[in-house]
Length: 65
Image 1: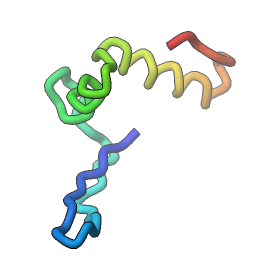
Image 2 (image 1 turned 60 degrees about the horizontal axis):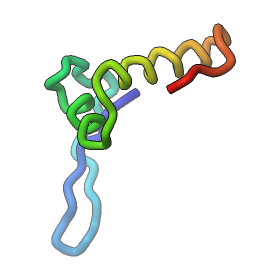
Image 3 (image 1 turned 180 degrees about the horizontal axis):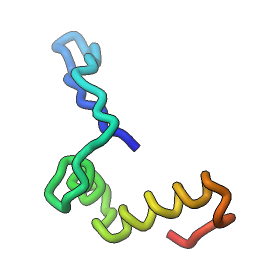
Image 4 (image 1 turned 30 degrees about the vertical axis):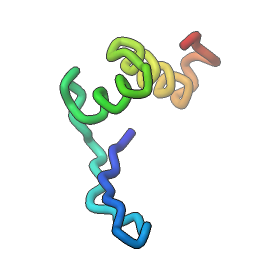
């Protein structure tokens, strides 16, 4: 999980400002706010992150999101 901050130049070029490998995870942090804008609640975001980590670790095969 990470957050990438970008800006769009006048000519349409996307510039990467920062890659944050440990983004804030309070309900008011940028990553949860972006998820909220996409229709994903904070508890659902946490569930998705935890489920993905467990799948990567081989602890579960699939979860319901």
